[in-house]
Length: 104
Figure 1 (cartoon, helix red, strand yellow):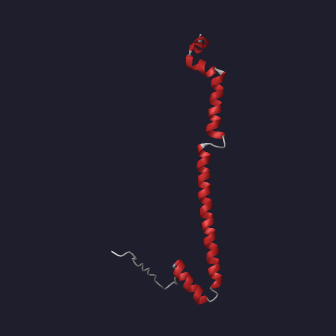
Figure 2 (cartoon, helix red, strand yellow; figure 1 turned 90 degrees about the vertical axis):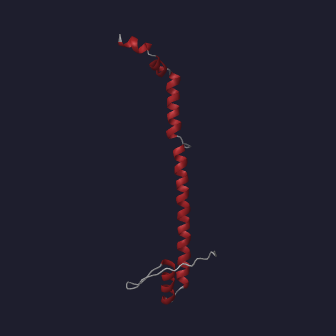
Figure 3 (tube, one colour; figure 1 turned 180 degrees about the vertical axis):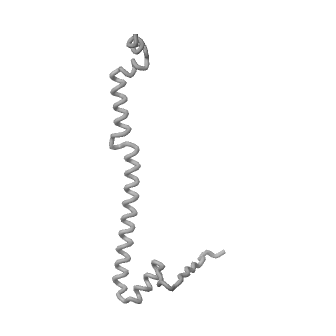
C-alpha cells in the first residue's frame, strides 16, 4: 500500500528520473566544485589585493632601508625617525602641527 502511494507521487517520480538526478549533480558540481565559481573569483580578487599591499610595503621598507643607509650619523638617523615615524624619547611630548594649504 505504501509503495503504490509513493509511485503515484509526482514529485518523487520526477526525482527518480535519471535526467533530473544527473542535472542536480551537474548543478551542484558547477556551483561548488568548479574552478570558475563565484566564490573562487572573490577569493582571487582578495588575493590580488593582498599581493598589491604586500608589494607596496616591500617597496616602502626598501626605500626606508636605503634612506637609513644614507643616514650614517646618529643625529641624522634620530632626526629621520622623529620626523618620519613620530618617535620620541621617554620624557618628551610630540606636537604635530599641520598647516592648511588651502586659501579661503
